[in-house]
Length: 178
Length: 105
Image (tube, rainbow over all chains, first blue to last red):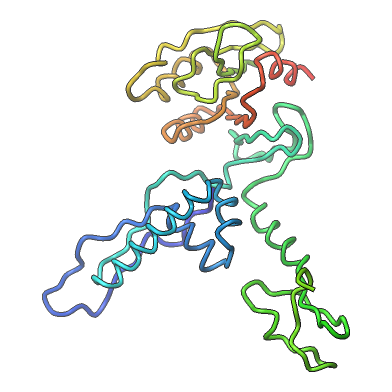
């Protein structure tokens, strides 16, 4: 499950004379999503496959295929078209936290407030939850000084050891590694 | 309000069928009168197009919600335009009776 990419594809420029835009490489939406999760949002493969709702081996296959296609486009100077694939979009689905069922909203203008099955109010809208989940995760993680305990929030993708404790002048460590 | 539930058999103790288009039976449950009827799915063994054909079957009954284990790619936009709500159950051990009890709560 995911949200649509901002663009439909990429075009090369500055080709040698006579070489026109050739057949595009077709990057499937799930392949785009796998690269976005792993290389842009810096998730590891385990959390990325959970976000996409596929098994670990399937995720690896999708990701490998995505990299192969992007590399082909770079090496052969081909266009990339992002389309197709087997995907559903987060913005269409809700999840009930009590009975664990997913449901869609047939009337897009009205927001749903309770689970159609168990009438629980404990539901979450998947279009937002990915971002919320990311914030919670990063809130929990801290870069901590191993000597004095000074801490700052951990930035995803930035190694803690690049941060230096202002008092002790030593590299910080991740709180869950101390 | 009418609800369609996909079923593996034709009694209330059957489990929810995890497939929509090629499920064995549909249960059409009427929440006001608490009555139900079982319909055999004519598309159970269809080679292709089972999903849209099954949508036709339940839409003719005037349902506003469908409970199943999974919906195929062709169906989603169709159900959206018909304003039918999809409810996906990830626990295949639930029986038809369980689902009906949940709606009656």
